[in-house]
Image 1: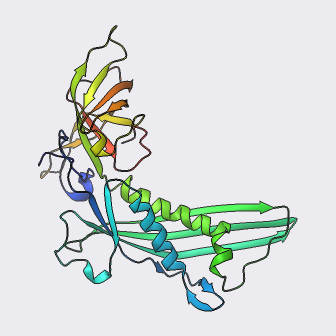
Image 2 (image 1 turned 120 degrees about the vertical axis):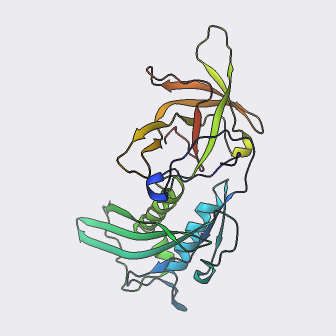
Image 3 (image 1 turned 180 degrees about the horizontal axis):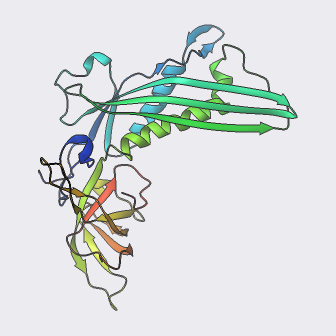
Length: 295
């Protein structure tokens, strides 16, 4: 495996093979995400204005999703057309995201005041951008509700974007899109920065223990970030092709005290006493903040 700031698919069960933790000593190109236009399959249209009787919901959702990816420091995202996928072109390791809104249930009951509810369901498909091979299919859902003492004006059968954008219904849609983003960048796809504890730092009294980590400012780390320390655990299987796999095990957490361009000084804040953190242990860091020490 090439050294560097590796973007690895850790779920070997999905992508066929065990993984290894390596020291990260240089910065690779950012992960490229091609965002396909969101499809509105819900049957509900949101007009741009009385003078623009065209559905703008899918466009607004696409714009929001792109902004989320643009805010990620180690991700390069752009809008892509469906016919760009599978051409064996573009950056190595690029992924393509296709999202469809297939359910949008919006209700309002007016009794004592007004009670609104929103149920938003999105389907997301993740592809290898070069080959077009589907990697993952999942669903993101959000339920939200609000109550007002005053009777709210009900949405018309075809709402306009301006009042819709200020309503509970759009807030629920944003939360569902946030879930799509989290599933791609922090969830089961397993994209992480990989680093190593490369040196122990002696402090007076010996506690708390400190280490030098092989990730720094160029890896988008910030003072205060909490990083997961993992030493892969070997697990035997009954699969003759893979009799043994390496599975990530959380052995503790360290917090960033200070950073340079390529390294960080970290302090141990949590560890398993039966498996104390040691020199050479690996670090698994989500590509996007907040970083709270989770695998």
